[in-house]
Image (tube, rainbow, N blue to C red):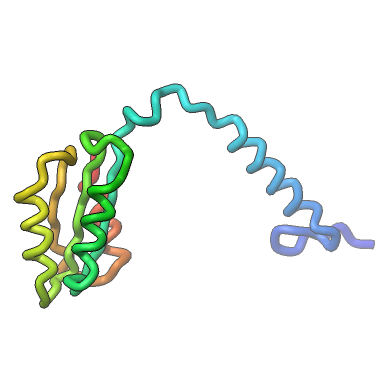
Length: 123
Protein backbone atom coordinates (compact mmCIF):
# COMPACT_ATOMS: atom_id res chain seq x y z
CA UNK A 1 0.00 0.00 0.00
CA UNK A 2 1.23 3.41 -0.90
CA UNK A 3 0.67 6.43 1.32
CA UNK A 4 1.58 8.81 -1.47
CA UNK A 5 -0.39 12.07 -1.28
CA UNK A 6 -2.23 13.03 -4.44
CA UNK A 7 -3.28 16.69 -4.56
CA UNK A 8 -4.73 17.51 -1.15
CA UNK A 9 -5.48 13.98 -0.01
CA UNK A 10 -4.31 10.43 0.14
CA UNK A 11 -6.63 7.62 -0.94
CA UNK A 12 -8.53 7.91 2.36
CA UNK A 13 -8.86 11.70 2.28
CA UNK A 14 -6.66 12.03 5.38
CA UNK A 15 -4.70 15.17 4.44
CA UNK A 16 -7.83 17.04 3.39
CA UNK A 17 -9.55 16.15 6.67
CA UNK A 18 -6.57 17.44 8.64
CA UNK A 19 -6.62 20.71 6.69
CA UNK A 20 -10.35 21.17 7.25
CA UNK A 21 -10.01 20.54 10.99
CA UNK A 22 -7.11 23.00 11.18
CA UNK A 23 -9.16 25.74 9.47
CA UNK A 24 -12.18 25.06 11.67
CA UNK A 25 -10.04 25.38 14.79
CA UNK A 26 -8.31 28.51 13.49
CA UNK A 27 -11.57 30.34 12.84
CA UNK A 28 -13.25 29.08 16.01
CA UNK A 29 -10.80 31.21 17.97
CA UNK A 30 -11.82 34.48 16.37
CA UNK A 31 -12.88 36.80 19.16
CA UNK A 32 -14.50 40.16 18.60
CA UNK A 33 -12.84 42.58 21.00
CA UNK A 34 -14.72 45.64 19.87
CA UNK A 35 -18.36 46.62 19.66
CA UNK A 36 -19.26 45.46 16.14
CA UNK A 37 -21.43 48.51 15.51
CA UNK A 38 -18.42 50.79 15.94
CA UNK A 39 -16.56 49.21 13.00
CA UNK A 40 -16.37 51.16 9.74
CA UNK A 41 -17.88 49.20 6.86
CA UNK A 42 -16.99 49.85 3.22
CA UNK A 43 -19.53 48.88 0.57
CA UNK A 44 -18.05 48.67 -2.93
CA UNK A 45 -20.56 48.71 -5.78
CA UNK A 46 -19.27 48.11 -9.28
CA UNK A 47 -21.82 49.36 -11.81
CA UNK A 48 -22.24 49.47 -15.58
CA UNK A 49 -25.50 50.77 -17.05
CA UNK A 50 -27.46 50.08 -13.85
CA UNK A 51 -29.92 52.97 -14.22
CA UNK A 52 -32.86 50.57 -13.94
CA UNK A 53 -31.65 48.94 -10.70
CA UNK A 54 -29.88 51.75 -8.81
CA UNK A 55 -32.98 53.35 -7.26
CA UNK A 56 -33.88 50.04 -5.58
CA UNK A 57 -30.30 49.47 -4.47
CA UNK A 58 -30.06 52.97 -3.02
CA UNK A 59 -33.34 52.46 -1.17
CA UNK A 60 -31.98 49.19 0.27
CA UNK A 61 -28.82 50.99 1.39
CA UNK A 62 -30.90 53.66 3.12
CA UNK A 63 -32.89 50.96 4.93
CA UNK A 64 -29.85 49.27 6.47
CA UNK A 65 -29.98 49.04 10.25
CA UNK A 66 -26.21 49.26 10.73
CA UNK A 67 -25.21 52.77 11.92
CA UNK A 68 -24.95 54.83 8.73
CA UNK A 69 -22.26 57.08 10.21
CA UNK A 70 -20.03 53.97 10.12
CA UNK A 71 -20.74 53.10 6.48
CA UNK A 72 -18.84 54.36 3.46
CA UNK A 73 -20.19 53.59 0.00
CA UNK A 74 -17.90 53.50 -3.01
CA UNK A 75 -19.56 53.40 -6.41
CA UNK A 76 -17.24 52.25 -9.18
CA UNK A 77 -18.71 53.28 -12.52
CA UNK A 78 -17.50 51.25 -15.49
CA UNK A 79 -18.06 54.14 -17.90
CA UNK A 80 -21.86 53.71 -18.06
CA UNK A 81 -23.68 55.17 -21.04
CA UNK A 82 -27.13 55.44 -19.43
CA UNK A 83 -28.24 57.50 -16.42
CA UNK A 84 -26.17 55.56 -13.86
CA UNK A 85 -23.76 58.42 -13.16
CA UNK A 86 -26.54 60.98 -12.70
CA UNK A 87 -28.40 58.75 -10.21
CA UNK A 88 -25.25 58.19 -8.15
CA UNK A 89 -24.38 61.90 -8.19
CA UNK A 90 -27.89 62.78 -7.03
CA UNK A 91 -27.61 60.27 -4.17
CA UNK A 92 -24.26 61.78 -3.15
CA UNK A 93 -25.72 65.31 -3.28
CA UNK A 94 -28.84 64.51 -1.23
CA UNK A 95 -27.44 62.13 1.39
CA UNK A 96 -26.79 63.40 4.90
CA UNK A 97 -26.59 60.11 6.81
CA UNK A 98 -23.73 57.98 5.50
CA UNK A 99 -20.13 58.54 6.57
CA UNK A 100 -19.03 58.92 2.98
CA UNK A 101 -20.31 58.23 -0.54
CA UNK A 102 -17.82 58.47 -3.35
CA UNK A 103 -17.87 57.84 -7.08
CA UNK A 104 -14.88 56.60 -9.08
CA UNK A 105 -14.62 55.83 -12.78
CA UNK A 106 -13.30 52.49 -13.93
CA UNK A 107 -11.95 52.94 -17.46
CA UNK A 108 -11.04 49.22 -17.65
CA UNK A 109 -14.79 48.49 -17.57
CA UNK A 110 -14.50 45.07 -15.95
CA UNK A 111 -15.89 44.05 -12.60
CA UNK A 112 -12.65 42.69 -11.13
CA UNK A 113 -10.73 45.91 -11.71
CA UNK A 114 -13.73 47.83 -10.39
CA UNK A 115 -13.69 45.96 -7.10
CA UNK A 116 -9.91 46.32 -6.87
CA UNK A 117 -10.28 50.07 -7.37
CA UNK A 118 -12.94 50.20 -4.67
CA UNK A 119 -10.81 48.31 -2.17
CA UNK A 120 -7.86 50.57 -2.98
CA UNK A 121 -9.91 53.68 -2.13
CA UNK A 122 -11.74 52.28 0.89
CA UNK A 123 -10.84 53.38 4.41
